[in-house]
Image (cartoon, rainbow, N blue to C red; front, side):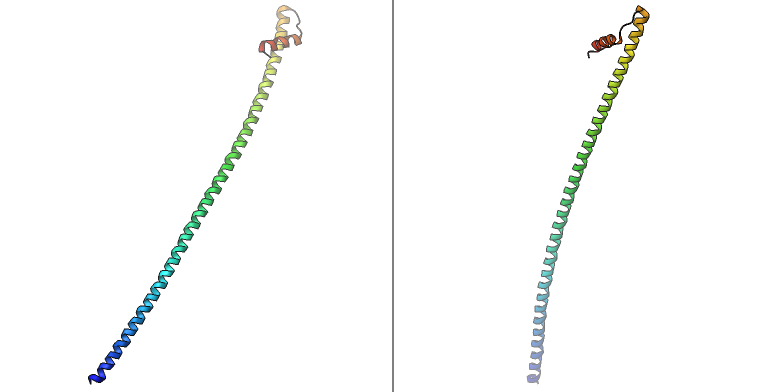
Length: 135
């Protein structure tokens, strides 16, 4: 009986050992494949991070350029408005000075006529006013 049973047991044990070895080989193969997939995913994630960083940096550069251009445009527009305001102020100042000169001239002419009972030429009055104003 041991001659019949022992070889069958040995056969069963050998089949089990072969199956276990085969299962271990398959498990090792699957482990290597999964490790390869994980490494591939890690590389793709790293590449995605780099790509995202590049996109962010490009966005920052574009925004910085846009802000710089807007500031330059604003500065130019502000300078233009400032120049226009200064020109307007100078025009108003010149007109006001002319009006003051005209009023002063008429006042002097009327006063000299009233006080001195004499007519002074408006041209002479304007020359005197210009002299006094330093023009």
